[in-house]
Image 1 (tube, rainbow, N blue to C red):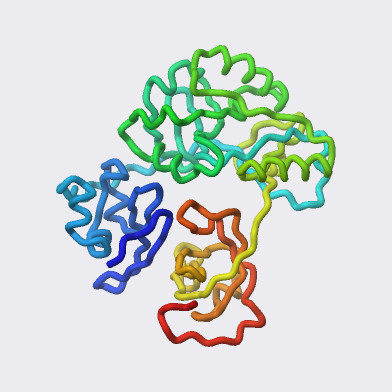
Image 2 (cartoon, rainbow, N blue to C red):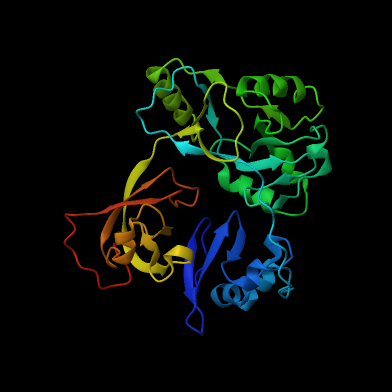
Length: 344
């Protein structure tokens, strides 16, 4: 079998007919099967029969140092941290006087006073020297390397060896959930505490007032021209609330692309029994899954295999894979039929 490219996802079918997704994110291989997910080993040390089937026994032995670890007992489900989540800007709401900051292309990290937690409640194993000087109360921020460095950041924070690679990262703080003050008061507290706390890897995200639509669009264009992901805007005097809130809005430019449908991936949960995602292919052969943007009717009767779709995405990864792809429509002018495995 071919090697799984950086950032790519592929679906395989087991001998029993079950389908599993294999991924390569930042050099870390994963599988959607329970055997891979329930291991207590570091994620870069895990394997399973599906990865061995796809990559070969020899390739997995070489990757893991000739030791194939057995699956372990399921771990208890982590508790998700109480995070504020954003809505997308609708392009009509006036954001004059809102607080504007760059949307960082890193990994969201909740500092609970002792450790970093992901949005799903999983621990990031940061070295003690990286967290030294952080306050003993919760912070909301981003583990960040640089613009257009999402995949390398993921590769670092997913490791469990607390190694020197963390020296490349910063913890950029944008809120303090436990401080019961309006947004401006929390920002004042952060700017007094974080710079003087002795943590040389932490800083507070710069926030400026939005003066109107022209300012918003100019700042968005400036950040994107520098390789940034977009903007985040906070409502003045707003509280920190748990869950998705209209007091926090994300603003970013998306691009449109076209790809050929090569398979239908089954849904799970409320989508069980109908489409979960489309497996699509770009003209150069890059494969990726499109799992959002569908109506219920489209999931019941999805675009046919071989059809050409328009999708919206944020940017391409270093491996050429669209990030956050969302279905838009089937190309109405697409008349060709496809019979071969190579679609372009």
